[in-house]
Image (cartoon, rainbow, N blue to C red; front, side):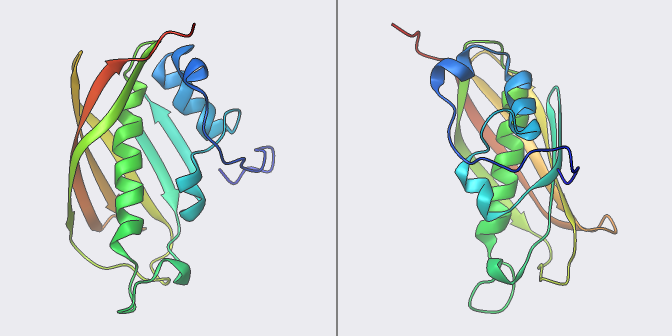
Length: 165
């Protein structure tokens, strides 16, 4: 999301009423277009050039020194934020108006380390199955050359959002 016409991010949490009022794909696209607030956790990864299609989300970001752990490489938490977000948002794109989700579990496999020299990375989340009560998805992080950095799977619980009074 580096286009000059794209507004600066506003971090926050949309209300349940806002989320329930639109299909999941519209909600995720609203976050990426910055017409809805970006989740506060994303301030840590500064995503850009994000796209959402039905069952598929792509997030670009650049790891930096501020993401390092004590041993001098990018912390696994950075990877977890990106993969959990991409997979869960991919699930959200499949949800009808009035539905929500929460992550029940996810598993990450780290293939190679990242550093501030890695450059732009691509995080992709793709739904494997979306049912009425549960959804599964997979995620991948690759570098600029398409080399796999990490991959993951998740299971999300799907539920009806509470009706407003």
